[in-house]
Image (cartoon, rainbow over all chains, first blue to last red; front, top):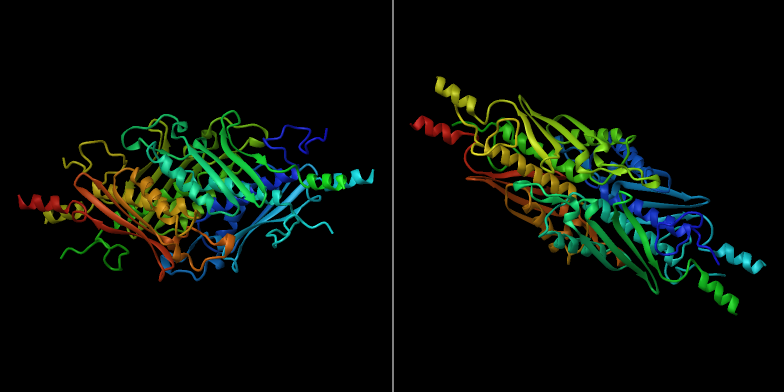
Length: 144
Length: 144
Length: 144
Length: 144
């Protein structure tokens, strides 16, 4: 009797999941994809902004993306080489990506940013609209 | 008073999310990463199994992964070239990846498989342990 | 007594090679790199031009590149999916890249373009200034 | 009257090039491809050997490759993170690739190795059989 939260259109998923859960899965797809697609691209201080815009345009095409912001800081790649070698390749340290996804009234925000202390490109859920799962619904039940 | 479900250790996330939600986010990271990392690798019928094992070993290193199964079907790349060109590059059509993640008692399974009818590499949540969000807890409350 | 053609500055290479040979090696690096870096990036008819410019900007940073031209034809990816799936990922079929490298008076041009008949992303040397190796010099010698 | 050096079968190339030149172009393709394909793959001390073998198997499928040797040194990625983050992603610093190509009696060897002093993944021609261009032939001519 309790309807799945993806009601009103057929869900892509085999498991029954809430809209918020499905969005969090999608947010992970976007960040995992950015990390594994672009590392190694030659860049300089002059080209890094254009590369960031191109990554944003690619992410925006993907399902459920409401907005995305990519920052690339070439200086985080350490000192530059010389002469012919005075440019860099995109590394994990340079990347900072924040993406917001929405499905109707539900939205989530996630971010990829390198954490120097963890020596790790950390991907985190920054915001998720509504409470965890069907809490609000439970409250209504108790209220009745 | 109600503790977040990631209690007992500090959550990575800024938003309050359930273990299941965090796992679904992580599952998306894994599938998005595989799709965007490996396309273009030269392969043949003879080497595709080894490549699949290498992808599995890489995914298994990532957080929360309990198991992973990668299948690569070179034949889905269409007819083969001749002579020196008689090998293929990994394309989206060839990839079938299923990954299971677990965090304590909670687990989720997700899959990447190309859907010919949609002309799309579909990533789906196949299974998620427990009900949506804190349902079970609500039940306990009602039971008490 | 005959000086290697990279005389006048230290060559990067361990083997003695002509400038033209070194440039052909570099041309291969550029085309091999483009093919293996960008496959899988989400694109549409609207964004493919921007992606092509970004690839050009990246290649232009690399040593010896005088000019580069990237064309991406999304239509070569076959029929489009529907709704949320109505965008594509960059595939080998869509890519056409021509790069010209120069080192002083010597220049070479190479091209990557998918050959439907060979089912293969063919990379070819399109032009190389001067004759093969030291032919001209040999001729001059014989002439003297 | 002088036959191009790729005699005996149709050359792939539009420009007239020697076998040695064509091989150097192909060697560049292989090294450029490896650099731009694999960066970002999760690895550990335990899995890096398997990943190296997989890269070798992929390169070996490509035209003209006689042998290839890939070494991955995870320790060159700097200190490791902790706990769930105690693994690495393949970075340019870790990679050392040597490839030998042959076409009949002609062979070339090239290598990709990160140079700390240049802060650059240097790709170099290590060996090339025969002298530069058609020297030997010229000698024979002169000898006759």
